[in-house]
Length: 76
View 1: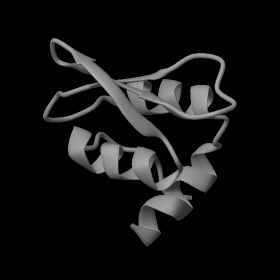
View 2: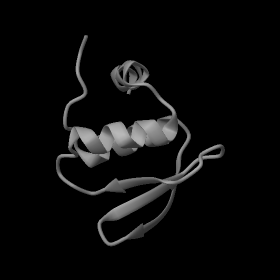
View 3: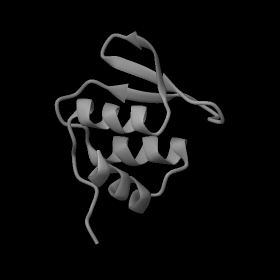
């Protein structure tokens, strides 16, 4: 099974927009995204390479499994 690896923030932003999140605001180098049904917003730092723990934490907030994420990432 493929593993989640570090990814550029712009690529993860494409994923967030694909799953229905909307950009709300930016504070410094952190962008905030929101989607109906979420308990808290998704925070995306604008690092060149997002560490895997940030990707996993944001997937947990979205309620998306790593397997689903990898399938969606292949499509976009």
